[in-house]
Image 1: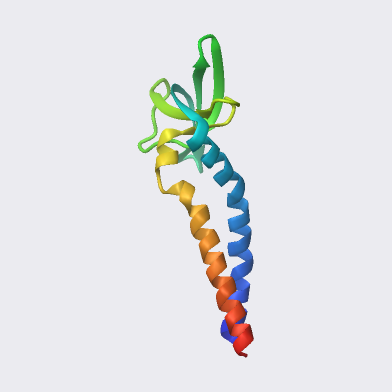
Image 2: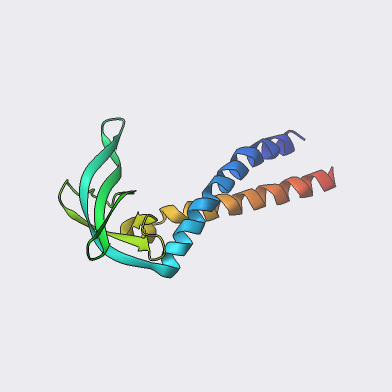
Length: 132
């Protein structure tokens, strides 16, 4: 019975994290389907804890004469101020932007891993409850 209590306690945070990942998954899927690549220039490196570059403020042009500023996840190694990076933007809404490196990495798939783990935990919990 203690095992089921632990599984039940794990379901709450894992389920909450899985739900928080849904908006990012929708955005990433939209960028994958109708996104276009553009060259951006790093304007500012945003640090976490003063040491690690956690985000990059960049500017790019989806169309001639139009400049869009956005904050994206940096590639590794992060570009210095003034260096170029590739971003993917939504052709319908150029404000929806993410770095191409981030979209090709494993990071966008962590939501799917959390959702799968949540389903497995719930199934274990249901089977355990039905047995006891």
